[in-house]
Length: 576
Image (cartoon, rainbow, N blue to C red; front, top):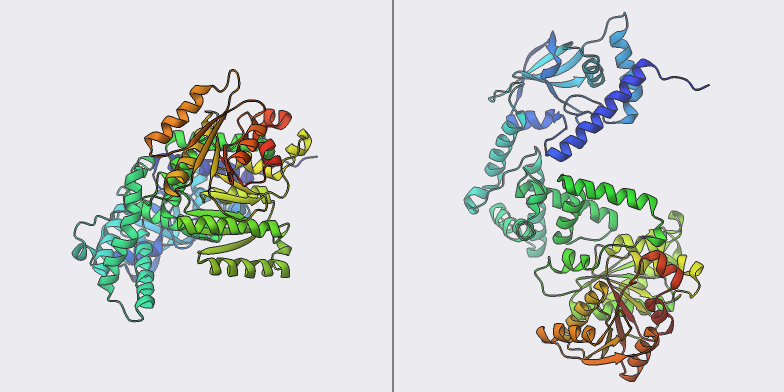
């Protein structure tokens, strides 16, 4: 028979639910839900302990922070951790029992209190509706007045900013700088960044850099480039009530987390966009994230459709100041001959674009990460990058190849894969095809390499006027104009889908952008016409849009993309 939870356990669960609701409300309104950290308040307000501690009955509403548990409770002392249940229940039962309750211990800063010992008793007492609690009180003297009806954070922020300017003299070296924040502790992050930048300058110069010079260089070369990206993308609109410096700190911390998670550096533009997408409190952004999670939960990975066409162009290419399309390239490395051929293609593109190459070797399980062959792959990859004069880094991770490629692809501009196993003609086989899954879900263009050595003298664009074909046209035009590659454009005429006007639309697009091409009309099965035209015109690259139908229909009926991949002897660049 199922045992009923105790009243104390029910109270804890209610408190946890209220805590979660407060955190959601805080994310939507931009108001902090955390307790204040005592050490930050005391340090910034230069508090000094005075007098002996006294036993007093203090108002629970005046307790605004904690010495060590400020992350574990909300501002109103609701528990945020399920692991606190046992200690919380013990505190609640002690408060409702007949025996004496041990007083808590607090620091008093003017008229507000910070818990030294007894956080769970404070939380349980507030949940029970108590208004006061007995406490051992130690007074902390400061020059700043704090009362429960005044926002302590505003005073702390002013004190922190004053200290920051006294330390850096930024208001003197860059008088136009306005670096206000809305969250305590941000200036400590900035000061640490400046110190690290000074150390890097010291290493480059092999001499000591004056601190003021380091501050100026950090502001001009590190801080302002990120701020300009945020202004250009108008990122502040996603975080109402916040400042540019708030976002700069969050972007820096977000980049650090991503660096630890992925193993490579993320550009500020990409990290800024991702921060807005994943953490903006705007209601429509929150609703979009909830919808994506629900859809992801109910949709099998193999038939996920991936992002809409053109998202890569909006997220990555349009955000960059540099006029290059492929700044970061992801290549899957399996250690086999075809895998190294894919690496050669990645290095070929990287040399043309001045890009970074991110190698990815996926092993089945965590225990395989230290295998000797993985170490050999690492050594070979590093040597090839070094010989090609390309910045490259190999990451070895455990998991499923298609999933890892799609997760990491969103931080790059191009994915390169060896075409070891083209999509099979049978529907069941297509459903389990890792390559088909990547093509369907991958948020970036995918270059499949059948084993040929890298060279590019003429490209063929298969264009049918669909949204994904428009993205292929965009990429082909870039290659034709920036790489000076002769281009052939084929439209296979199909009743009700493509006409001569379709081909004319591609012609007009290219002409407006200074591109030239040979235009071909095809008749008959599309894949056969594409392969035949590539052979006739001696093309060594085929560019096409991704799957055009919904995923289920593609799996059942197959697609022109699958047919081209099965029959092509040239690399195929698939765009979305």
